[in-house]
Image 1: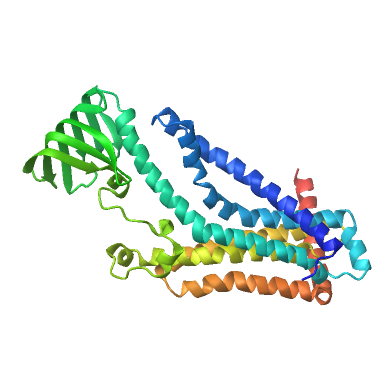
Image 2: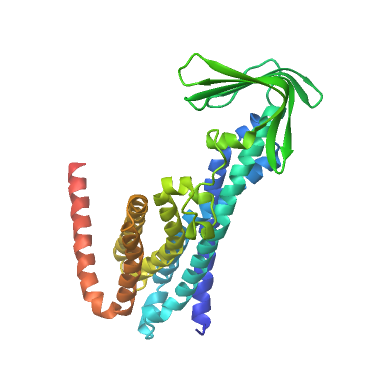
Length: 389
């Protein structure tokens, strides 16, 4: 595919607009989410670098959501700019049809789809795993560095921690209650203890104490004494159970070839299916969004109302397409048949846009009539509103 001067000009325009939209929207949303996590610094005793690392791990998920919107907006901006400057009209008069202009937009679609695919299939699950591990480490640091002596502190729902005083790195007079599981309550009492990292996992190592366990509503309890006992703090993120990776935290390979004997997989098989196909569908939606924008504004338009109507129609089409995609994604959790509809929706949209772009001149009278009807309805609504006002 050879690129001429015009193709390079169009590709540069859409690239600058897409990058500006992507960076701008990502920064705005990232800052708003980062402000909600300031408690890491103010309440959990973490450094500002830890805060930045923690919030940066959410960027891949943001890029996946924002990138399709950014390239769609860039497509509309580029084509509207060309039309406003009468460049599209000059190109059309020179014999350059919309299908001859699609090459730079197609290249942008391939680049953006590849970026989203890389983020979705590889970077995002890795960032979610790192985020979960970081939350576990922060929890361990919270016990060691933030809890003040003599105070009962709630670390999580159903988890209460207290120590009498600190002696160097050791905590003396420890009381630790874990009642997250309604069927079983655990109370740890120890003379001393400290937090240690063992094989990359944070542990609260208790010495010379006892464990009191009470099951359900029964008043009977069992007490076990110990000389040394380690509590795995990483289990806090999984309601006291063994650490289990959620579907979004698993690699794409693990979703493609799950262990059929894993209890968690058998329990939420539908979530595995929905997560896997959502990752494959994400780059397809990027292509669909760009083609919707090009199909709406690729033809030269001589009136501002015509451009506004086309842009509004493209925006509504994108919003409707994405809402339908989210609905089908939730349906995939419950039904395997929804997978076929989930792929058919964006692919049929792409096919329809390609048909409109390729058969534009033959469809132009139909679009003109639709635009005329739409403009008439808008004018009538404005007139009625002016009368009532």
